[in-house]
Length: 290
View 1 (cartoon, rainbow, N blue to C red):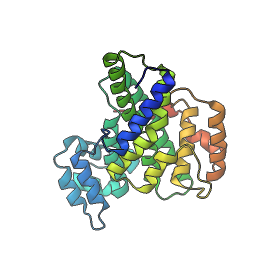
View 2 (cartoon, one colour; view 1 turned 90 degrees about the vertical axis):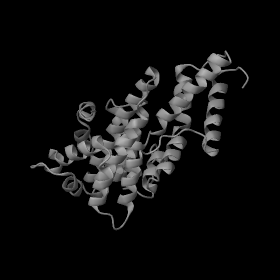
View 3 (cartoon, rainbow, N blue to C red; view 1 turned 60 degrees about the vertical axis):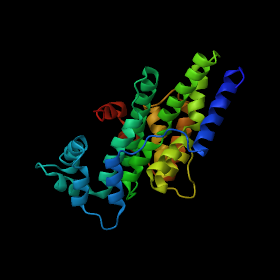
């Protein structure tokens, strides 16, 4: 690539990433083998919690998390449960969410300080969107609140992968080719321009349901033909999270308020109710970090 402006470098990065997705040469996070096995079991029509428990035996950290969640107040935990009892209490959808959340979290961890800072902020935003999406789904009578949670949690999963790819490109251009690198604004533009396609590639690799893929692809646009859809729920949650202090980068307040107004109308949510579930959102999200 010839030396040029930041815009030229950004365009080169975008095309390079898209080509690597097409050629299946972009390094994408994989589901841990135990998680993959458990998710496959849970997809089966005749699965048993005994089989899931057996698959989890080699993953003590995951067992500890399952037991902690199952015994929490959210699941009316009044007595300590063994693993199989905990799995039964959680149920198929909640268990899938716990497994995929733990796997997704690993994609937002980096040893590089610059990437780590972006990854943590993005994970915080994703947790906020997921939490709000689940609340909104429950309030609107959607019977798949866990899908809304996963859609919110994974809607930006492509961002840390693109950030790592940018780090590789920076080293190639600056250290090897001795060319000028892009500024922070162009860096953010490059992440935002391709992270959804990267996220969809991850979703395909993880064999996520179509509704979760739609949340990754379309969470900045409403589906007027399906007013109460999961993607509309995540889209509204995304805007509310940004307005309430859980955002990645600068926020266009007017744009987000317009999205909130449209989303409230589509989902039939009053402004008072929305303000109530968004109250102290940063503090709620902070409590989700382990």
